[in-house]
Length: 167
Image 1: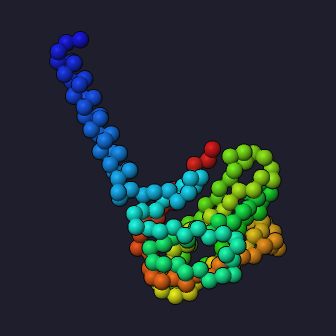
Image 2 (image 1 turned 30 degrees about the horizontal axis):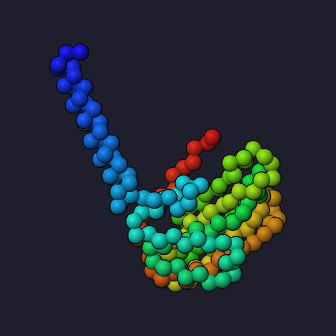
Image 3 (image 1 turned 120 degrees about the horizontal axis):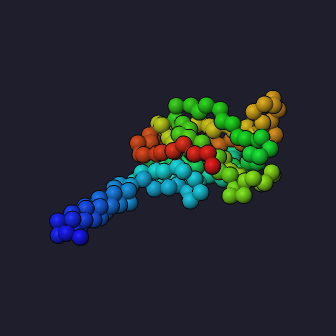
């Protein structure tokens, strides 16, 4: 290998290393978005708090501080066609997104997964998240959950829910 080609190889290697280091700073630096949960796709930015809500907190009033994303997680059996459906919320809070989490062995019928609703405050005040559990093609429901939020101010943080790619 000639001296000139060795020089260009070393320079290109150095440039590649510097580019990777710079990329790492952007992706993993202090301003990087971070995942809400290990098995989901939702990301929040720096300064954003995450408040996990379970089924046990239904019918309670949950204080939702400003710059907080509430994650309402409910069990669902997607393989049987059942899902959770939300009614629109008022101006004090809104649903930022919804995510279906299937278990790793989801090819089995009857294995429950989760539905996550991501809720953020829009203004100070009270808001209600009404959810019904049903099949989209049937009129009847098999469950209902109500989550009440007392929002303390507007969400101004960062939130992202990338589209999931089909397996």
